Length: 212
Image (cartoon, rainbow, N blue to C red; front, side, top):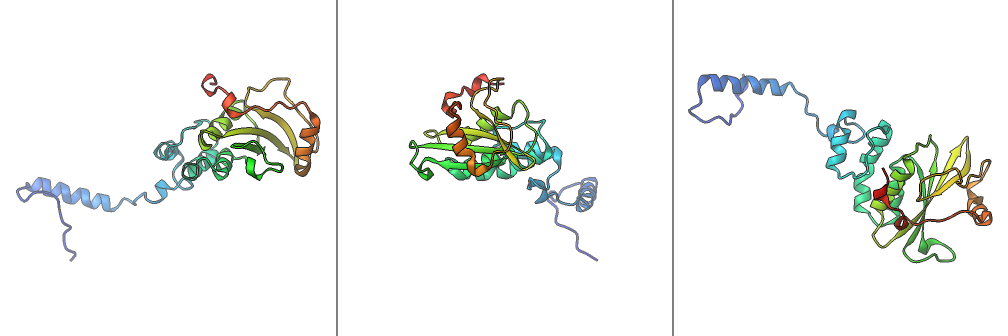
């Protein structure tokens, strides 16, 4: 016969209180502990994701986003915060939306770029919604350091091809630069330089508070 489990009830507890303590203890033994899966963004129930995001300090959250994006956002949140201000954090910020990043810091460019600037390229292989550019800018703004400026290039990937859609930091319009057709990644920079019509904006030029 197994020994009775220790109780936190005082010695002068009534028989009813002791019986309730024993009964509830047996019920709790039947419950499978939710940890550590509950705190794992890839395993936690979908309905718990917003609470896990709040616990991890996620500042940009879309309740209507796909489950895959939500789990990725939570999974990368700590890496972004731990490495904030670095190219790796910017890469994670782009990846958290399900995009493929290509980050080029000023000291990695030849010739050297303007100090404390980053070129952030986001290659998109999924459908693009109207609010994605604002969300991308907010996430990059949270991942970069205060002194840095980032220029974002959005590239749409369709059926194995890359097509430049926009260089954003301002709302999209009908006059956006759009190069439809095959645009190999290795020729992207040269094609942009020769186009001569792209306007570059920095993230510090963008008024995030004015956006919905």
